[in-house]
Length: 220
Image (cartoon, rainbow, N blue to C red; front, side):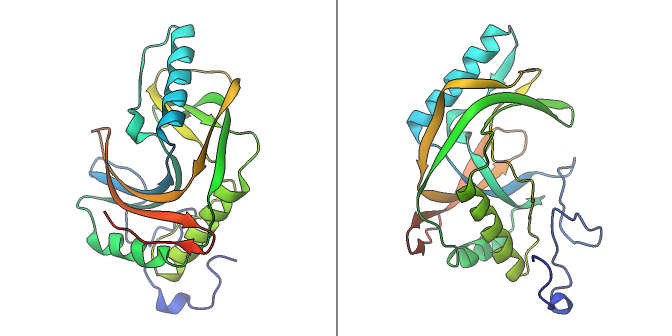
């Protein structure tokens, strides 16, 4: 089980974002001081991103809701957060690159078959998801948590992890809607994303192609 290796004495600053232990050193929640966030994700290809965005546009239009759709090149399914920062940590970028060499995952299909919305703080999120959790995405989530734990990084392990793609933030209140045609694509890489808070802009710090024998590291 995660966090029970018997080596806690040599990792005094390490812990789980899921546990949100108060003694941990890094910020685990977005705050007024946070300027950027770093996380690992899979991203749709262009066709799937355009399909997802069009679904969001139609749902918002049908309900007469004013909300801004996220830019196509920011659509993603998040796997694990790395940290929140006042200043980006190059050490954390390097640590992620090192631990990605241990990840084992072949390319797999992502399928999102329904739209819905939920509250996130003061905001409403319109998302695409699937009623059946993807075993491949869950396996990646668990592998990443284990490797981050082993590297002494703050890690996330969420047993209720349900992958989703956020289409918009705003006032959209969308009842769960099964899509006529699911949004599908082949996930072929894991991406390390640096999100600049309040700018709707991403920097892509690393890409690791999925292959039957593991992943190949490629920073930048």
